[in-house]
Amino acid sequence: MHDASGVDETVEALVEFALKALNCEYAGVALHTAGGRPDVPAVTDPAVAEIYRFQLAGDDGPLAECMRDRATVSIPDLVEETRWPEWTKKVLELGVRSVLDVPLWTGYGAVGVLGLYSRRPEAFGVDEEAIAHILARHAAVAVATARREENLMVAVDARKLVGQAMGILMERYDLDSDRAFEVLRRYSQDTNTKLREVAQQLIDSRRLPHV
Image 1 (cartoon, rainbow, N blue to C red):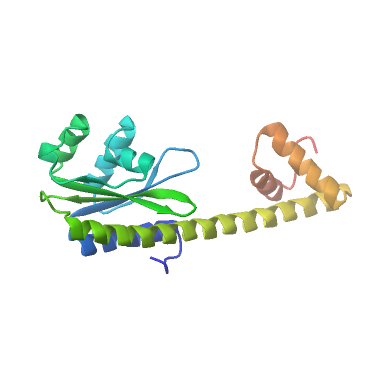
Image 2: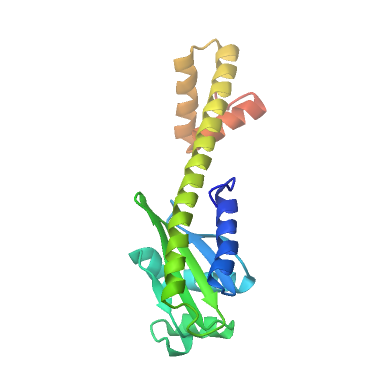
């Protein structure tokens, strides 16, 4: 996981390894996002995607609880589960009998949840839960690191674009660098467009309206 090249690759490695380490049939990852609604970047089977879609639509269930409280949620046998009747019925219809949701978090905050699903009841005992927690700790660090690296790359790319756009304005309109940046910033605010997108628009079209 730590050698993966990005967030998507990291979580794909996580769910594939989880199947082997926990000897379960299905696994998936849901990640916290800045917008608040969890993102589901990796599942090992369409059944897991269906479980997540149904649960996120109602914002209720073990995934929501695990994300909210950063606490492990273990369901040894869904036949006996009473907390989320609609979700339980749906998951049982998909052939799942036991569930283990483990939070992914670091000292900097919550990252997401690793969901493990088995067709067997009582599939996740004390040993399996311990392994899942170890895996989750490594995964949380790997995902957080991959996110920081991706954000850094985006920031570097944005600075390059803004620099290129400023150069175009400086050459075309005989502006100094401060004035060129102010033009981009003002246009970004007036049009409610991200500065990076304004810069890309100028580079592509070689002009900005009203400039």
